[in-house]
Length: 307
Image 1: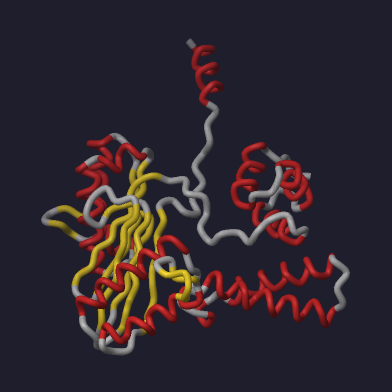
Image 2: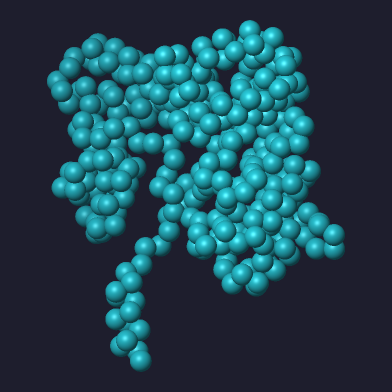
């Protein structure tokens, strides 16, 4: 059996809200596999569905840049939150986002792009030397619309286009640009808060749907339900799942009496034309990155022993 650390138990508790002993049992049953333990708890009815975003563990900034009908989101990581308040670092993230608008979102192309006589990679190295912390350009993504606008929103903003969550969303429409821009910001705010997986059912990863179905079916099976009933329960559960993770089906945070799709349909009258969401990108700082935990007391004791 895998050695189950207290940190792993805590992480599972944070992800699921299940009790400590249940989390220890789940990790024991799954040989320490975190995702399998989440599913084990859900099958036992001891946890809710796992969220898409991982625990935020890295520092730095998300940068958003929009130019006309084109937009990008970038994530630049640092070792401490203090660096995010540094004007040099903020300027670097803005510069990287602007470069990505021109050269695309391939990390290698961004790093090799020149600003004057130096490359972005050189600028990163210089900032590392000046500030004294390691920094990395982790990822970048973009959107473009042929007609319409790109809505944008930055949460926990520390400056124009910089913060801890960045969202861009494409609204394709021939309607009034100013109305669309205001609507796009509202939809981007919704995405920041509700963290959908896809625009609609067609965009959800089939592997995610299959996993969800298996969890629902196995939970019903453990309750002694017959096969025909299990299938119906799983199908019903998937419909509920889609409402939770598909943008157009989610309750609109600005008016929970309707879903996002209905809110957009209503807005078409004000905009003066049909509106279609072509896609979105939501970056939350550090999602999916695990930061090495340290025992400060142990470090001090070790240092004392060496002195």
